[in-house]
Image (cartoon, rainbow over all chains, first blue to last red; front, top):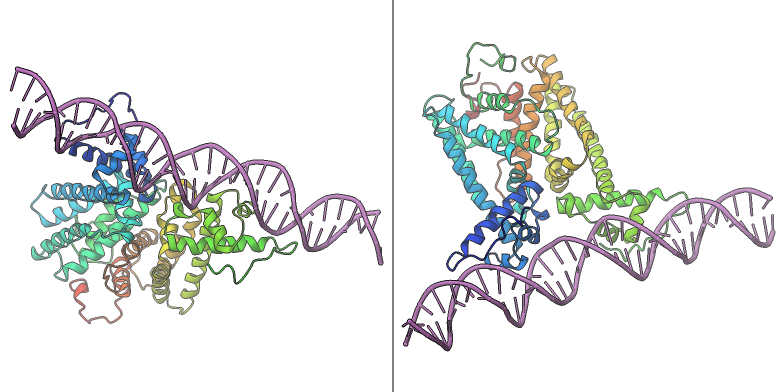
Length: 215
Length: 215
DNA sequence: TGTACATCAGTGAACGCGCGTTCACTGATGTAC
DNA sequence: TGTACATCAGTGAACGCGCGTTCACTGATGTAC
C-alpha cells in the first residue's frame, strides 16, 4: 500500500533471504484479504512490497510454490499460538478448551487465512499433509482428558475427530457468512466439549436448558 | 464438450428461455468441476454449450448474476431432494436422520457445488439468504423429535444449529480433502444425532465404546 | 594498497493468453394490413 | 393471398485489462591476488 514511504532498497549481500520473508508476509496479508488462493496474483504480491514481479522468481518456482510456502508458515504460526494458549493451565480440560477457543478466535481474526488454509482448492491440487499436526495435537489433548478421568474413556481419535468436525463446522459457517448474527462461539464450544467429549459441565446442577436431560 | 454432435440451432420464437436454462445447467456443471465461483468464466459456460459468449448477456446482467441464479437453482433442487428423503418414514428421528444423511451424500456426489454453495467468496459479496430455508427445515425436524418425546426437550434452534455445524464440519473436511481416508459418514452422523440431539441409540445397551458412560 | 573479477540481488521489457463487456449487426419468424 | 415490417434470438469483431512467465540485463558488493 504505502510503498512510497519505505522505498525498499536492495538487500545487502547475504541478506537475500529477507526478501523471501517479505514476500511470504505480503502473500499472507493478501490471502487473508482475498480469502481465495486462486485470486492471489504474484504481481499483486510484488506490488504490495514494491518489487518487480520477476523478483518473486528468485525465491519461488511459481505462484503455487509461493502460496504453499505461505500456508505452511501460516500453519506453523497457528500451531505455535495454539500450543501457547494451552500452556495457561495444567488441567487437561482447561487445556483442551483453551486450544479449541484459540483456534476459533484465530479464525475470527483471520477469516481469509482460515478459508484458504482449510477450504481453498489448493487442498485438492497439492499435498497439504503438514496440516495433520493440528489434528494430532487435538487428539492428544482429548486423550489427556480421558486419561485423567475427566472424560469418559473411549477412542480418543474418534472423539477428537467429532470435536474437530463440529468446531470446524461452526467456524466455517461464521467465516463464510460474517454478516449473519451468530450466537456466541464460546458457549457452543462448551456444549461440544460436554456433549461430544464428555467433559463435566462447568457448573454442575445449574440446569442449563441445553444440557437438560443429559446427566 | 461434445458440441459437434449437437450443433445447437437457434430456438424458435417464444422459446428463448430454453437457452437460459441451458446456461444455468452448464454453469452448474462447470461449478461442480471447478469448486470455485471465481474460477468460472462466462466464456467457458458459452463454450460448454456452443453459443457465442455474448449470448449469455441476453439472459444475465453479468457473470455474478449468472452464478447467483445457478446457485439458487442448485439450492432449490437440494431442498427438494432433502424433503423427498424425509418422506421415507413418519418417525421424526428417522426423518431427521434421512435428511441429514442425504445432505451428506449429496455433498459427496457434488463436492464442487457444495463448496461453491457454502464456502465460496460469493457468500461475502452477495446476499445468499435463500440458503436459510435449509437451516429452518432442519430446526423443524429437530423440534419434531423433541415434541414426540424422542429427544430431550430444549431449544430446537440451538440444538439444530449445533447439529448443522457438526455435519457441515465433517462434510466440509471430506469435500476439501477428498483423498484423505475418512471414516464412514453414517456412523459419525449417528453419533451426532445421539450426542448432540439426544435421540436414542439404535440398539440400546449395546455398549458402543463411543457412547459408554453416557446413559 | 590497488584492481580485476565473480557473485549476489534484483530489474524492465516483452510474450501470449483468457477474460468481461460493448457494439453494431444478422437473419429467421411471426403478424398487421 | 401477398407483402412490409416489427420482433425475437442470437452472432462476431473488437476493446482494454491483468495475468504468469521468460529473457537478457544491471549495478553494487565482496574477494582473490
